[in-house]
Length: 315
Image 1 (cartoon, rainbow, N blue to C red):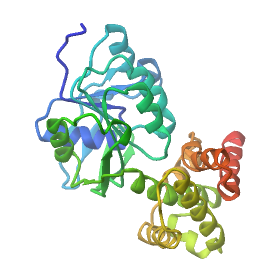
Image 2: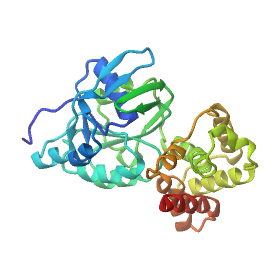
Image 3: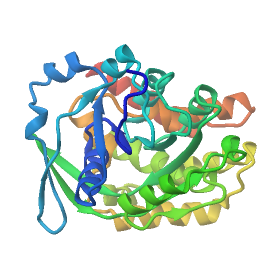
């Protein structure tokens, strides 16, 4: 089955972002297939995938097709061609990429779209002959049972990973991305927006989880000192990777996001509240790992990392 013809778009996972992208692709009549990582674990959730629907901003309802399993394509040696999108939780990315190894057809394009950092390094090592695109998005929705509700188009920033820049991107795959993602912004150096988003996540996610508050309440809890420390540490770590950011500008941007999303609960707050594993190790943990490897003081991020890990352990 190695020569089996496969859809133009492959989306790993049935989370909110993956489901929203699948719904858009279906409306545009593109060939799309979603995948779950493990059929048995999926069944354990007692959720009939055929009943999953997406409600768009306009109220239109889309029924998503039955997902395939990554275990199945591994067993059948199926080659995924076209565009392969990985919008799963940050701590799941490495496992998914490992499962995909050997199952990407020559010329396939890999798109990483998730919170946190660290997956670019893994993807570049596992897929040195494939074009890799990385991105960050504020495309938003939420899930209630088997229904995913789209709440915001958000803003998506994308860029081709430099380690694969010698490869020529497939214009058809770029066109697919531009169709299914609302008005993406493309960057020559994707690490700049990724580290910018990382600074925001390093502040808002753990602090809202620790204090059990909405995003906006962070501005009234006397936390400006720790917020500035966290941002400064991220900026210094980014500089060690050749990414130059301005601390004052980053600090202002974090405060602006806190205000703009003041009625929201962060994803980490929700993960902690519902007893789920958080992405702390790919957010503040990533900063700590790079900082300590480069002799940078990252005590602020390390403190938040340890507090969240302690909360998870006690749950």
